[in-house]
Image (cartoon, rainbow, N blue to C red; front, side, top):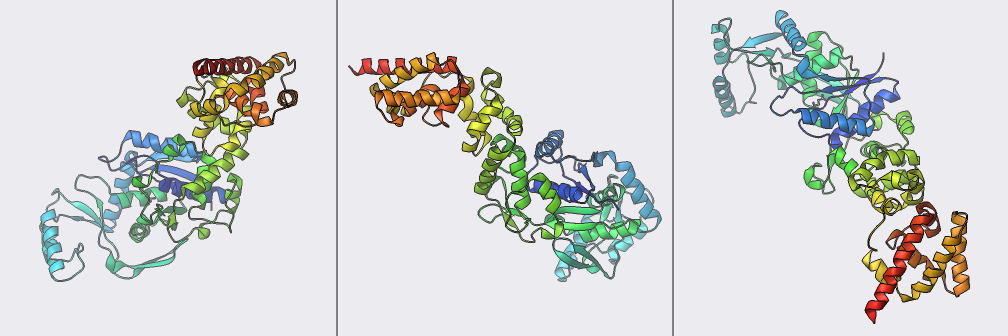
Length: 475
Ligand code: GLU
């Protein structure tokens, strides 16, 4: 039997990290079993759903690289099928029409509460029975599923273990509303059956639906899939992760400069483990993933760890991969990568210093665009009168260089130190501020090599002009 999993978001907003983790687990489980992964959009709640949300979910899934083998299916396009199945259950007397009005149901409920009984729909309540018997064909009604009255539903949740719920705790669920629309729990079952889903991996907020759904599978004569309900994600304060903890939308993580591999690695560990291992390549995740290693208890989101992983992946990923994801940030900041050195070379040099792609984009701007002012603090400290002579000598040597290599530039700096009998800092820092505009960069010889001779020469001249002006003003 081919394993088939699905991710079934309701398009009420962006793809949030909780949903993304569920999607990742479903995707990983399918991959780990050589199976297939289905994307289904549960868009039956017309008031709360929007096309924008559908687009945002697809964008998030694509950005994370969670490719689906089938879909996206849309529940709103499958109403005929759901209704066909409602009619089948009706014909088999596994469902029935109920004509009780809302007022009557409220009245019965109040009565049950007064009698300290569990408030529930009771088809055998004399008042409800009377209404249903008196109704005529064509009167407005809902269709209710005839839930078994005795026994219990038992299932082996792959994460939480064996779960047993007595049928006496479940009432006859509405499967078609008065307006003819099928209801959520029913649609999910028909979909999972039709789509051949073997493993339903979803959030534990759905665990109460599962026994009801299992009864519907059985009534339809459909095989019951295996279930795995994942625990919640909490914020750092122990409350359920929400907007007030900061970013919750996957695309916000793109905006903040995370790599999808880092977010995936972070999310897989958030509730799943393989010993103490923290770093998993995608292939490793696929090879090692198993449902029973998912934690039963809630996990807390830890931004520091995510940052650490992001730095790891910026440092160790193929620079082409980093470049692909950096592009969006370059566009945001108006940095044109064609206006300077090959971006992958710059990434190799600067990447390891950065925790996010936002930082990386900020730190490489000077390779591609000239600046019209030096960082004020760095200039104040390093572009002073004492730097004039070393910078002039460096300029002359740089201009005279015939081969523009990091080694030769390194030698230029060493020669300036020897000839002027100064320490490295006396030329290194002024040169760094001159060519990068600021006080922080990787090794300045390598930086100059990538920036290129023309720009380096012009920038040292700009630094010298700055020093001259400063000296003039001081007099
Ligand atoms: N549409 C549901 C949700 O977004 C998921 C239902 C399911 O996975 O069965 O929470």
